[in-house]
Structure formats: C-alpha cells, structure tokens
Length: 98
Image (tube, rainbow, N blue to C red):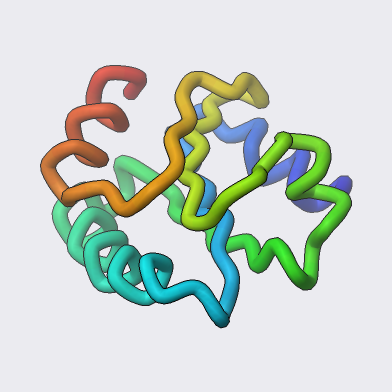
C-alpha cells in the first residue's frame, strides 16, 4: 500500500487500471491502454492493479466492477470511470488534468 501511495503522489498523471484476469472487458481494455501509453509516452504513468491480488486497495477505492480506471496526480483522485474506454476518451481525460 505504501508503494501505491508513492506511485500516485507523482506530479505526472497516473492512470490506474483496476482489472481482473477473468474479466473479458479487461482484456479488451489492455491493448487500448498500450496505445495510450505509446501516444502520451512520458506524459502518463499507467499502472495495472489486479483486484483479486489487491483486495484492500480495491476496497479502499470502492472498485465494484472491472475494468475501472482511476486518474491520480499529486496523490489526489481526479477522475474515475468503470467500463471499457476508448483511446481518445482516455487521452482527453489525461490531458485535461495534465
């Protein structure tokens, strides 16, 4: 948990992908996130959190469904949304808070 706190305290936007290995929509989201990272490069950190391996973290951020994206900057939760999101939508949100 302390490692997570240090990650989200970045002054670069940090997109957390709460996911699970058994989740079909999560498998759809994964290559989209690779495209986002490729396009924004150092403008964002993308971290994948498996909710089954990190139940305390999922509970802390009230993740009830996967995939759920959460955007942090300087330790603050700026935005979150559940469901599969398209590349341009994710990039738009990240740029809005960058």
